[in-house]
Each structure stands twice: as structure tokens, then as C-alpha cells.
Length: 337
Image (cartoon, rainbow, N blue to C red; front, side, top):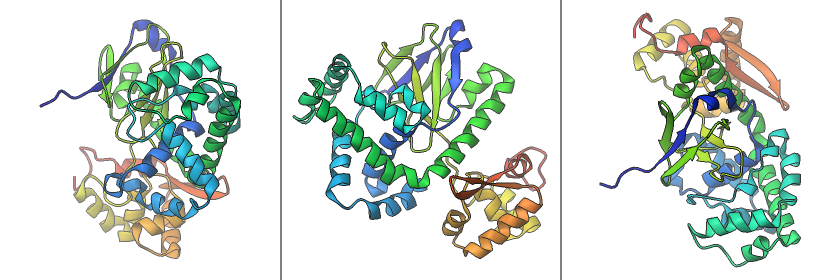
């Protein structure tokens, strides 16, 4: 049996002072990773994204978006073990427009270096030679492609991406109460065996931080494995998949049954579903109930202090309060567990 490949991040004591967890999703990372989800065969697509895939495919007609998808698929296909880092500049943390502005001004030397590295792992189409040579029109085409793909794939549900990533970050901040060891242990999909943080990866890769620290970016569309910037010329960045929770069914069946006995079936299932922030409409679709029934259940849970609701980007997003989270979290002292 072949040995499993892994990403290994090597920490020193100095690195612990420079660990960051991004406070918001990165629009350019989410764009590239959403494209990866869209490219997967249906049977391989994670369950939490299948409804989304069906919705966005209805908005991908026309030459401009098809050309944009082709450009990004050429540079960053879903099965690539590496794709050029210039597609996801650090400045995108300030917003999509800031990131695209930086992308448009990527130096020719960097374009050539990263495309040459990508060509070692897979064949690149002929047009990328002009991009590697620094042709501005080709670089502008890439920037325009990212903006258009973001508009069609990511922007319509950005409110949910933001709410879900914020929820994950709050869990990391809470873990930090136990120290940096607790934070690193809490990262979904990673294993922390000091001084090395490791995770499954398409290839063997060792990143030695050497006192630079690392910026962790929680991602809505990242799935299966993290993605890391491995270029030693750039600040270390690791994008990791957040733990999407399926909208119906707690991991402990007896707990869900107990909640149904206390709250009623619709309220219990709604409470369980809201471990992942959601709108009323999305809840209704996933739970197979009407919007009015979902709305009534959410209101009852909100009145009981189990759910918070807030307007985000023109949509009302529901999340669990601390009390609601406690009800959904298995614990030794819970009756029926």
C-alpha cells in the first residue's frame, strides 16, 4: 500500500507569536475553490454542495462566462497538486477589487516562475506562454475571468459564506482560550503533534515557518484537504476547509430523539440544521418543509434564546446562540446520551 501524502507545517517557538486566523473569507480563494467544487463529477461532490451546484449551473450560459471558466480551469484545475499563487494575492483580504488590482500588476518574473513550477506537475495550454511572458492582455483576461466567475458562482451566496466562516473563526478564538496548542488541535482535518501540524495533501510537502508564523484562512468551498502557499518568497498561508455540518441529524441519534421529545420534530431538526448558519429558505429546502413552517420554528427557537437572526447582505441569516450550541453538543451529563 502506498504511503499517504501529507502537508507538514513545522513550527518553532517564534512562530507561535505570529499565527493569525483570518476574520473573513477571502473572495479570490473562494472563487477558485468554488470552481473546483463545480468541476467535480457529481458522485464526488460533497453532499453539502450539491444543491449549490444545481443552482449555479443554471447561470452559466453564454460565451463570456464559459471563456472565464475555461481560463481559470486551465490555470487552476480541480485535480492540480499546485496552481499559481498569483491567482490568490494576500491583498484580496481587503476585498475582491483590491485583490484583482494586485493581480493585474503581477510582475512578469513572478508569472514566469509560478507558471514554470505549475508546468512541472501538468501540461499547460499554449496560451499560458504569453501570460508567462508578461503580456498584459492575457493578465487582464485572467483578472476579468476571476471577477466574472466570482459574480456567478460565489457572490449570490456570499452572505452564507461570510456567516459560516465567521462561525468557524469564533470557534477558533474560543479554542485559543486553551492556548496555541488548543487552537492548532481544533483545526478541522489537521493533526497537531508538536512541533508539526499535518494534514492529508495531494503530494508530500514540508513548510518550515522559520519564525515567520502562518496565516490560516477558513474557507467555505475548500473541501477534502487544505491548500497552502508553498513559495518560500511569500508569507506562509494555509487555507483550510471548515467543518460543514449536514443540516439534518446530530451525530448522536439519541440526542436528536431527546430534542424532538422536548421541542417537537420541526424545531429539533431546525436547531440541528442551524449548526451551519442558514436562511429560512435554505432551511426549508434542506429539511423538506415549507418556508412558513421553517419561519415558525426559527421564531420559536429565537424566542427561547437558542437562535440569533441578523441581516447580512440583504438576507436574514440564522445562527445558534451559545445556549443553542450547548443543546446540540454531546456531553457526558446530557440526559439520553
